[in-house]
Amino acid sequence: MLRIHLRGLILAGGFATRLRPLSCSKPKLLFPIVGMPLVESMARWLSSGGINQIILAVNHLSDKLKIEVGHHVAGVPVKFSVEETPLGTAGPIRLAANLLGRDDPFFVANGDIVSDIEIRHMLAVHEETNAEATIALVSVPDPSPYGSVLTDPNGKVKKFEEKSAVLSATSHVNAGVYVLSPGVIDSIPGGRSVSLEKEVFPKLVRNGRMQSWMHKGFWYDIGRVSEYVRANHELLEKQELKAAKPVASEDGGEILRPSYLGTRTHIGVGAKVGPLAILSDNVSVGDEAIVRNSIIFEETSIGEKATVEGSIIGERVVIGKRSRIGNGSIIAGQLTLPEGSILSPNSLILC
Ligand code: GTP
Image (tube, rainbow, N blue to C red; front, side, top):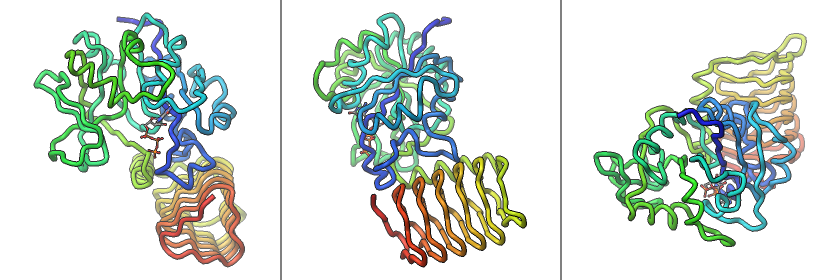
């Protein structure tokens, strides 16, 4: 059925504690995925499936998101629903009832998903099976950090377990993307934090009104650092070298593929960038500096002869000349490291 309104609500009010210290100054939805803010990557995906209105359910760092996102992302109109206190994963849906409307099914997605889940197909299954909720499932090599879902042969959900410790290797996990019929909104208690997974879905499962849909394409939950890095590397490798007009100095540096350079990046004379260097917009790499296997957020500057390996550096960081950033380090945004700083492997420099 052709729908005039297809709305998608992105849950973006969590504290992203597992991405600290990078998330102290940057909401998860603005984390770069091969240089593109996650919110833009999600908006492109949702709109490719026909979603023509995005609602961002926010509280933590909501002002930053409002400023950065404005009224449109990737051509899709955006409305904000702002919580005074965190309402969990279901409470924000109830709070946004007026924006979601009462007539059509709508999508809900966790605000940390990078995927090509087929929105139209999922919606069709939701309607064909007359479900109240349809959940996207994925198969992952290690299901232990995720909620697992058991289904019958027709895909009807039989059991929903959140982050269960005991899982079979064949468990299908919750991909964090749902289609909900408007009636679900009324089943969510108002005025308090409510969990979709613990409170809303179990009731629907008991009533036999929860369907699943198996996703076979790509899917990343970037809520953990290891998955954030994996998503960036795998997507980068898919895209290959995308040198979006780098402004190299006269001689320029050496760029080893695969690497990504955002717009207005500056690579100094004799610098070595890559492989697996992902530089967001306005990053500057000084003369003879080395940046390898690292993700550098926007407007960060790496001084002359500095070395950054296997690390993630937040936005607007200044790394002094001749510094050495050891493998596995993470530096929070907006910090300055003085000249000659030496960080041993796996250092965390907090905000
Ligand atoms: P961690 O602190 O690292 O667990 O991160 P998180 O709370 O952001 O993520 P979690 O996986 O627990 O939550 C799944 C999704 O729900 C994320 O996109 C969160 O932003 C979102 N979320 C969690 N709690 C709330 C809330 O109280 N309000 C809103 N609007 N979104 C929430």
